[in-house]
Length: 428
Image 1 (cartoon, one colour):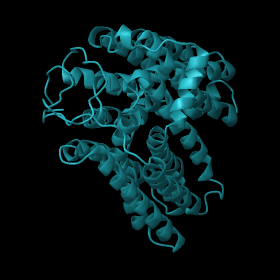
Image 2: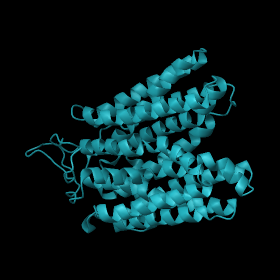
Image 3: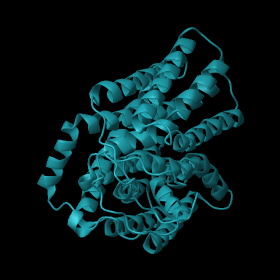
Image 4: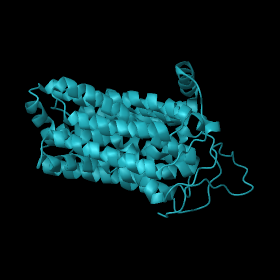
């Protein structure tokens, strides 16, 4: 990974459709920018996963029933979804830097207030606010990448971001567990507040404005809704965004279903399950880095459709193994295929969905994120409809989502996004 400035590069005399994005400003070192944007993109798993080990203690401390404690998780997810469709259009209108700094600062403040919450009802409200503020980091980080790159270059950069934010779901519960050894659940939110403060300082020092004033998209609520309508009417955007959302839903189905399937049904110990979970997450990160090498030879569309097909085959195979009463190791291997393939799906689907919309990249990024959370939220409860006695609901949900992702990227997205000329090989 080189430390040179981030910039767009096109071979002279290329006949490919040019990128309509203005030249990216010279930012800090590449490693610095990747770390900042990757960490901003990780606000979701940090906010959700880090405090999970402390949920029982939280309920006892606030004298709250289990359903009320779970509501603090739902509130954060709702805030993360709503915040993306708010922050995206705002960043198209006012630029990236200001709304991003406001969102990150708000996240730090909301996290600190969560640590001081006197009751579970107040905590639910503050978790919703924390989610809305954190969503600014997620959606604007994607828009910043689109400001700087398109097509192949964007897909490779999104793969780099996954090297950072792909580790968050692995590390967040571990960090939360370690914090709980020295303090209470309130200390977890203090740590989240400190992370927010550090990211505010890093963003202020290392990320200049990437959306020039003449490229901003003025308009109120009406214009924002019309923009969303145009995006949803664009089959290329919708097909790739929905493929990304369905893949995200398959991951949520795996996350919510696999603990019960592997531990309650097949008898895996919590320690063995944690090893399996970590291996799958590392597979996803490794695939995202392999994607950077593949993009030197293949187009994002070809990689995406192949990865979605592999995921669908793995998901259908999982359903067959579960339905036929196959052994646990066949299930473990097929879950690895399903999860690891996401490292190829997410960066390419995101780049293709945003490719044709440089002037409304924030709105497009927000809508992309909301589709992910909607599908994920719908998929998670489906895996438990038959209780914990069978793995069929999880396998069927993942299979349906996997096949749906292939259809979205091939049938619904009937034409490829307009790709800029392939950049010259570099260390990206």
